[in-house]
Length: 166
Image: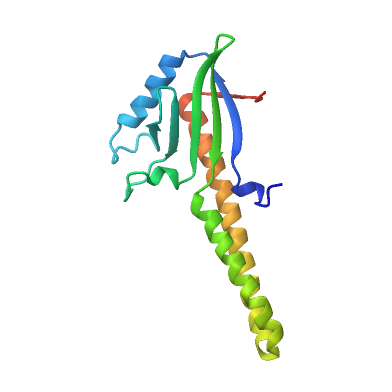
C-alpha cells in the first residue's frame, strides 16, 4: 500500500527506437559532453554503468556533485530485444517534494490539537491548515508537471516512441 499521491511516486515507462544500442548510447554521451553553459540541449546525463543512465534537466548551478539524484530525473536502461532498442525507464520526482509534504503534514498535525484547545486560535488554525493544504497541492501539481516535461524532452531529444511495458 502506497500512501503517497501518484504525482510524487515513480512512474515506469518503456520506449523503443530503430537505432542500435551503440547509437543511442553515443547520442546520450554527446548530451553529457556538452558544457554546462551550452543550452542547445536542455538535458544532462550521467552514466551509472555502460547502458544504465540517469538523465535530468540541465541547470546552471549544481552545487553538489550528486545533485542529480535529488532532482526530477529519469533512470534508464538500454537493451536490445526483438531487433528493437528498448529503453526501460523510471521517472522520479524531486526527492525534496516528498520531504516538504511530510513536514507540512507534521506541522498540520501539531496545529490540530492547538486549535481545539484554544477557541481563539481555531479561526487562525483553520487558515493555517488551509494554507498548508494549498501549498501541498501546489507541490504535488508542480511535481507532476516536472515529470511530464522531462519525459517530453527525453522523447523529443532522442526521437523515441512509447510502448507498453510488459
